[in-house]
Length: 196
Ligand SMILES: [Zn+2]
Image 1 (cartoon, rainbow, N blue to C red):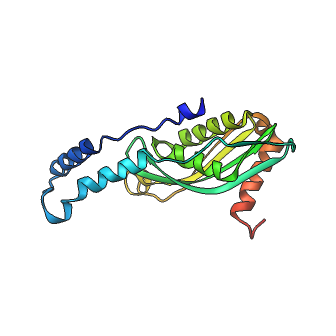
Image 2: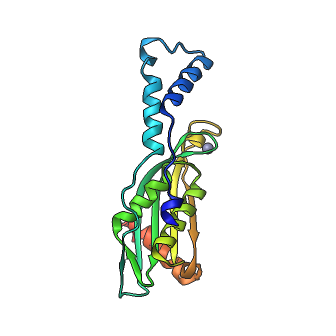
Image 3: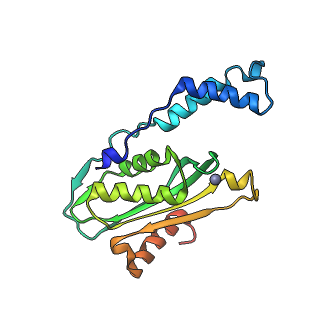
């Protein structure tokens, strides 16, 4: 169930410190020079905070009497790390759902987005994971998730080109062209308020 799907991994802080020290040596650095003395500890702290991130309570749902109303939350900026290169990527996540009999508090969408972003992932996987959780919490397939992001593995290495990657997952009523178009226009209107 959702809480198990979201189970937190544990970071072996001491082992990460040792390995970062080894990595510094392997890339020709002296891990005992002043600027690097605290680096293994800082990186181990980062991985602990990143992987063991606690999003707080996720699954508070309310019953709703308003059926068939589309609710969208857009522009939720999250940071994750690409599982192919272990380099950061950020993306702005938009979520929409059409309630059947339950609604989720607004902050829960951000918590669910952050929770899934705090892992080695890919943008395509991230939108799918967010959608899976929201479907489970709301008990409906009527959930759409879109993300627009930039990946440092493409910006600072490889082709070295700034870009935006867009990915989306749609299910339930969002598979219908009208509903899909309404979702896209809500996301666009929220992101470009002056042009709408
Ligand atoms: Zn990558």
